Image (cartoon, rainbow, N blue to C red; front, side, top):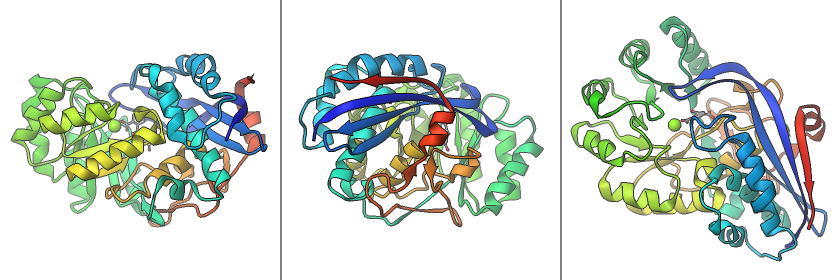
Length: 369
Ligand code: OSB
Ligand code: MG
């Protein structure tokens, strides 16, 4: 394979329902769609799903645009390759910038699957034909608003609900949701807002039968995660802390986690995401695929990744309609009783809606060797 042309499209889409976490709030997203073309004219699409602002991770849309156009794409243009993991090796000298890498890596994987006439999931080694989806609910103005959201998602058939928590919005919303749904697979995500001063409060959450407590402390504070895990039964899940497979090795050694959230974006692509999956599976740690409100392209990559055997917990791959009125793929991703089918067509398995992309594009760049 050889990439002879590449295009970046910065596409803006409004969210159906505003989303707030302990670290940021958003009403629309600007993601960069990456289009790689090989000598045969085949196209691979990927999605750079960075937040606009550096509040979840250090990257921004602008930093991703810069890194992708200045470093990542030029490094692979006109360079022959046979497997996407060779491209990950080419980028290894670029430090960090995982969201930017992930979009280009995904496009290369899709191109690779297209060239082999197989679904992306099969190219990755996935075996599941369907994946179970959960939903992630933001911080709402009131507990009643939250209960309305939970009711809607449970009625839609989703078997797992994750609640964003933050100081002042933690024990009470959890108590209210648990009181209304005694058997629901429920978990919480703090996006790193608490500190070692909050251990008592987090221990209180141990009494609600949560499936996990996700990223209670700052990304680099593995020691406090390990300390909390020693005192509670509820598994701790890490998200922001794990940007590389080396981070995972360290966290496992410290016993700072019992569950891993694997995000394609945060790990820097499908190649490292798959490696993290293999590591976690070898260590007996269950994994699930986290989301970044991806448009359809990134969402389908998440579905394909979730078809790997170690993804035994529900993933954040809920239906397109939960996020966007219209998605950039055709048909949109749908969930029936909380289950999403893994596409059987080649590559992404869904068509890309170029007209919708063009209608929502705010910036474009063509790159050639
Ligand atoms: O921590 O998982 C997170 C969205 C933006 C930033 C961080 C997170 C999230 C989500 C989105 O929870 C989940 C989804 O895409 O469904
Ligand atoms: Mg998270």
